[in-house]
Image (cartoon, rainbow, N blue to C red; front, side):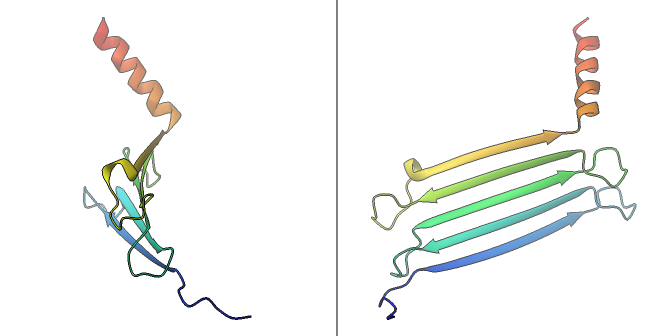
Length: 114
């Protein structure tokens, strides 16, 4: 079986940052950013790029994440002009919060509204 003359290429980069805001030795914020760049046709120009950033926050200092935020930005050179334009970019955001923290927030909002 012969391999095609041009082949695609995938480049993956993962960066992680750990932040101890209060200096107690326990991570308060952890961020991981994964970037994937794909050259589908092997011409040296990125055709698809996706970056996902996931950040976990320990709000109450117990060492466990209380809030997790994920943002994914995807760009695809749909028209093949070698440029990923604004119309070829999609952004997706997700936030997950511990249920009891949501209940506390709702209670505070209700008290403030009174």
